[in-house]
Amino acid sequence: MTFRNPIHSMLGVLAVLTTGGAVAAAPPDAAEDGDHEPSRPRDEVRPMNTHGYLNGGIGYGAVDLTTFVAEKRANGFTAELLPTAAGGPAADLGVGLRVSTLTLGVRGRVIALQDSEAERTVGGHQLWNLDAELGLRVPFGRIEGHLMIAGGYSKFGGLNDALRGAKRGVDIDGANARLGLGVDYFVSQALSLGVRGAAGVLFLSRSAVPLRELAYMEEVGTISEAEARVLEGDGTTVGTSYQIVAGPGVHF
Image: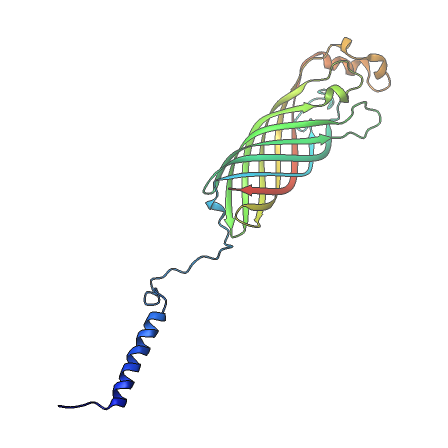
């Protein structure tokens, strides 16, 4: 019968305990390190994982009512009561749904138009637009570019107050179609800062305004009778508008 050296026995037990402790202390997936997928950073932004958006902005816009009008008198549509070209502060607000790189939404826009010509009696007025829009978005990390096509309804507002020489305001409305470009920077998955620009075509009509509706004594110095008679008939025009705004967006 053979007895082992006590020192050798102690060294053997110690080796077993050390090996077991190392195995126990190792991470559960250490042995599967080759199959383990690295976790994504917590601050990683993935715009295509969102399903909806709400964004808006403020900036500048302008309108030209006679861009495509082939008339001898460029002021035939407004009879010089309204400026054929004007600009001013602009704002928009949009909301919609997103599926991968495509978006479908609704956007409202307004341009507060100003006219500085002293010979005209028009005050401040606005161009309002309500459009449906289809967008294509292409993300590059935190930066996302987008292209939009849209169309809808346009109307001039504030003309009753703007035209001080008329008892009844001139009613101008119609349709619009526009194309837009923009870029967003995603501060986080849910918040972005962006710039959007859009240019479009306006198809507008004006209702007839009888001469008796003009407070003619107030217009003697600014509008001739011949020009005023233009308002007696309905009018149409095809013009253009553009707008550039910057502001935040919320994504969810």
